[in-house]
Image 1 (cartoon, rainbow, N blue to C red):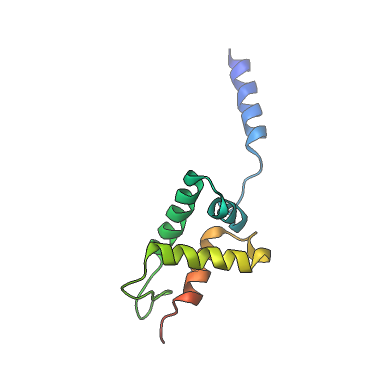
Image 2 (image 1 turned 180 degrees about the vertical axis):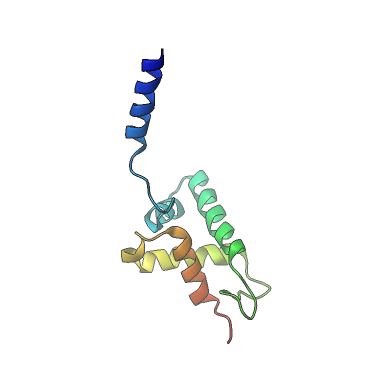
Length: 109
């Protein structure tokens, strides 16, 4: 029984693939965002708004979206940026979301 468990653990480790520093790349995010499957669209919106919610805002923040910006607008900014910069999609998705939103909603310094 112990041998069987050990073999299963080794096989599982081989199937899992190589470790990555990031969990979601821009390619992964873009694929979900442009998919026609509702669950992919919801996943994309959730990811984008989740990253947005973690970004520092205000005068010393990274993004200053203003009081009336909607989740749909934030989503649109990110998808447009991913479409316009396909060579950057290999980077971590959270970084790309933050960068796109920082450019679209800059803070006045």
